Length: 185
Image 1 (cartoon, one colour):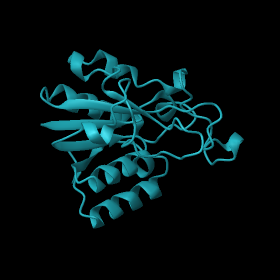
Image 2 (cartoon, one colour):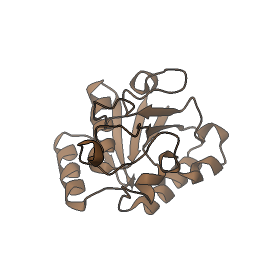
Image 3 (tube, one colour):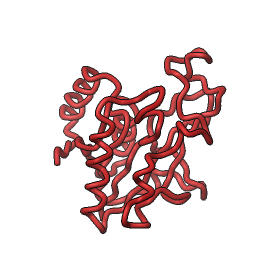
């Protein structure tokens, strides 16, 4: 079975304080991929920070305030809620929240948990595609974390967006050097 992990496709990474380059195009490709693969499982990760998160500039970190729990900016892309397959729409079981601790920078979604307390890296199996935002941060770390767990994970390139194009390109070169599959369609 194939599983698609969509990393942090949230309002703040689409059009908010940390809007990623290429997000609209990536979202279009992700919806098309889901709609054309009725047997593919879909799971989501979501940054879910408190206002006191240490990654925020105002709290001594490097990032603008983003994805604060229960705000519009933390919401997943609305288009996913209109998917034809109800099982592919975001819900409490297939959405894994991360970044809840103020003192730890949690780019990887591997330790994200759903409403039942299930941990993402313990849930996913089979062939895994990873996509979402941002290529050079959370997508990268989720992909590397899954591979470290011995899982068969590949990058779905049409479904990613990035913060900085040069860093995105460096990330792709590094992933290729690590022999991690990169699917381009």
